[in-house]
Length: 204
Image 1 (cartoon, rainbow, N blue to C red):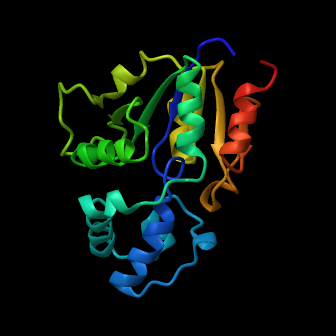
Image 2 (spheres, rainbow, N blue to C red):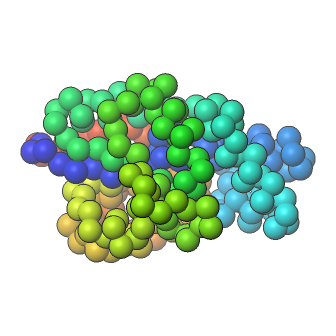
């Protein structure tokens, strides 16, 4: 495989964020929703929360201690480091708010991913977004970037690949994307990092 540019989403591709949120929702509100029943990317809908409860959930889920506690998705760091060792350009592009950058960077460093760049993409126009920084991307800046492969779990993020018709997208299989229609033949459902690795290296 010639040197490629690879986009990797953070939550539920690198770490088990939604699984952690099932425990947080139970602890805060007594909402007992098994992980396999988290059917919507919108956690307010998945956990049947009020607006106020959802805001509390997101605040708790983005505290430093909470972010650092998320378990790594098995195989993620090993495959990513293998890609970097082979000369590929890997960027972590997350929709987390800018306020979560430092904790997210620390999590990556603690999981042997010091060499990857981390960007917060301002997908939703958050008020806390920090402009003119090295790690934040406005959409117009993101759309100038080119990638050969992407690893993503959120159907809501698929539209951010429309400008890259040759992009190959590995959709990390999760309960909330199983009923989603994949936009094209360049989207491939993968169950784990082993399958992602096989897809990246096939025919190369």
